[in-house]
Length: 118
Image (cartoon, rainbow, N blue to C red; front, side, top):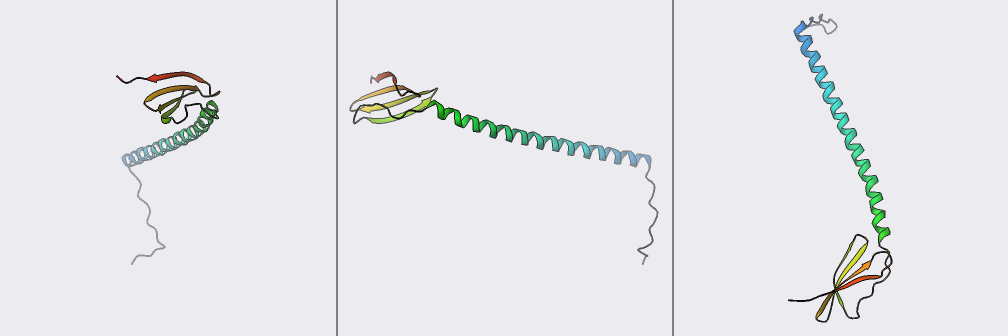
């Protein structure tokens, strides 16, 4: 058995081996730096998206403050779509189907469009 206290002198590396190790170190450092830049970019994108979504979430709520809408008594609402600050309600009253467009802030009716069947 060999004595663990004895250390053998390390062999000197050849210039070619040193060059290969140098290139390997540079490649490793480059890949780690690229990985860190990627993590920073992902973190920045997440922070940006969360800050944008909180602003976007509050904006549409301010566009629509309607407390009530006027549609004929006994009418059945087929659909209601909120877009561009307006609320479009399609309803059916008996045999007649109509579309009413309301202002999203005031609740005033802008237009009523009767739907005719062909």
